[in-house]
Structure formats: structure tokens, C-alpha cells
Length: 140
Length: 120
Image (cartoon, rainbow over all chains, first blue to last red; front, top):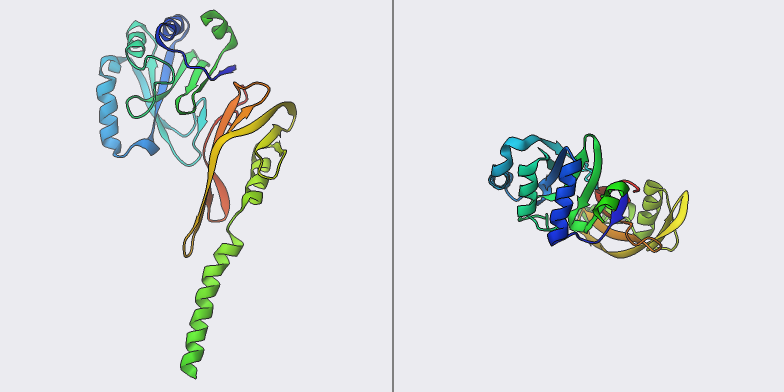
């Protein structure tokens, strides 16, 4: 995996999502519980935000570790969705760049998977992402 | 006389209770650096570990680019928080952050990202 600290924005971001749509089976993002003032309200906000793709939700789990981050004493909600045309549109309509997926407007840390293999994972608040080298070659 | 003895005794106990946590459980930079080296298998290059190399991978030198260390002490408590963002000099894309706090008698990781989670 390569580590990149430059954001992917605008048309490049949309092209990246299109490319990931071709290769990925699902994607995920997280909601850090440490940043939730009132958890019920934040989860309700997330339900509204993801209303258009609610049927694509695979699962919502509580984790303390994901691809780019580990929270030994805390937890976050991990939302996983099927990757398809509808969810790709959702990703394009929100954020507009990899690093703009950040609290409080949006959930954080987009992660894309081809079956069980992670091909791209963002750490939004630290402004970097890791990406599969072959995938990065196709995107460039 | 008894009254003064009793008063002195109370003062001693209070002083003892107050001073003990400060001198026995409050960490300093040396403690943090020792803990950091042991936890992440790194070799610090200076006293405050602003620069380190990974043991077994000497190709990258990581430098502390930003962060903070907060210390505060209460009557019975001592708090310390450290945050650091390390970036490789040779490969600036390689970054990692750690956030650590002192919890009574040991350091506790609150968040780690990038190179501290996995070495890409």
C-alpha cells in the first residue's frame, strides 16, 4: 500500500469514485463516538444523511480499530455499504474530496474494499490515505 | 500540647498524601520516551524523541512535525497528554500520529493512526 498526503478533489475525486465502482464490492465509513455530543441525535442525523442509500447498508457495527486508526479505549460506528451506481452517486454528491469526509458535516475515513481486500482507506482528520499500488496506477 | 500534636499529625498526613502521588506516579519526558521506545520498537535519536528510526527498518527517519504535551496536577491527581505527528524525512508521505494520556500509573494510548497502525 502507498501512503498519500495529497487530497483528491473535484473531477479527480469523481473519476476516482468511478474507478472504485468498477473494482470494489463495498465501502465503509466511521462515526467516532468520542465526537458525538448526544449519540441518539447524531445517529438520527446519520439516518437522514444516508436515507437515499439505506437499502444498500450491509451492516453497522461498533469497532475500536479500522484500516487507518486505532482507538484502544474508545469506539466508533462502522457503516458498510454495497458499492453500486446509487452509492457511488451518493459519494460524489457528498464530500467532493477524500479529506472533506469529516465530522461534523459528514462521517469520516472512507474505506473501499474488493471483497475482503482494502484497496483505499482514508484518515480524514490526519489528511492522508493509503491505497493499493495497482489501483493507484490505474487512477493516475 | 495534645491539641498541637494532633494538629501537627494531621498536617503531616495531608502533606504525605499530597506529595506522594506527585513524586511516585507523575511521569516526565524520560518516562514517555522509554514507554514510546518499548511500545513501538523504535530507537529515539534525542532526549525528547523528536526523531526516531524503526528498529529493523533504518531506511526511514521520522521527525515530530507537530504536537503538544499537556501536564496538570490536582490535589490527588496528575494528568499528562501527549500528541505527536511523525513524518518520514526520506518518504514524506509516510506519516503517523499518536495520542497518549497518563492514567494513574501508566501511559494509555487514546488514538493511533498511519504508521503506528500498519506500515504500508
